[in-house]
Image 1: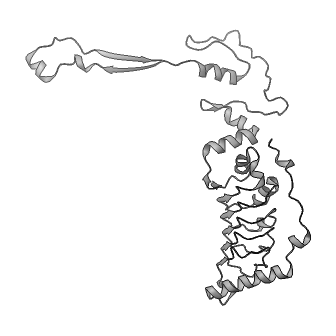
Image 2: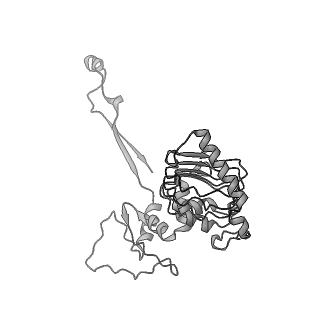
Length: 288
């Protein structure tokens, strides 16, 4: 299947009754939260730093903005369709939403402190909308999106790495430098052209035109009184990049010179005068 992130199939629209919490769903969620507060012995909302709400058959969750200091939230293995209950939980650092039925993540951008986000095994189909919602999370380091419908598209992983450069672990695997270089080549042609134009410590002209990627330059004229040295290539190129390519294709000669210690008499040999008085010899090794 071809890679077209802007034309991905959208999830079938659920009815308003599925997207909005119904009365019984809210009651189940409220009871689950109250049970956790009793188990942990919290008397004030400000004392709540974590909530375990996994495997509760929840289809929606009550507004959790009352827990201002909430940092860790477990909601995996439920039946959630969306995320509309995290509006002012600015301290939240770890959010576990895997194994649900979530088809959109609108609202997650309001969590600037999020460090770990697990969204695998859901129903996310629009990768462009998903990445757009996560772009503002500068502290996000660990992200899992595998087993979502959009993961079947080619270059899904590189697409996410390109748009979320701060992520260090994606789908349980560390992001490598090779992947970062690959995503620049694929999704940022201008930057890739600039990187490739750097050679021998100097940057040559890297102007980029999407219609004419190779800029045509007029031929350079040499002054009549200009003289080349004998060890300089006299070929003049219209494009400096061509000169760099030709130069890189030529093999260089490397020579190593060292003293031949076999011709140097030892102290005993000098005393016995077994070797002549010839001067020591030099060895030269040439590599091409």
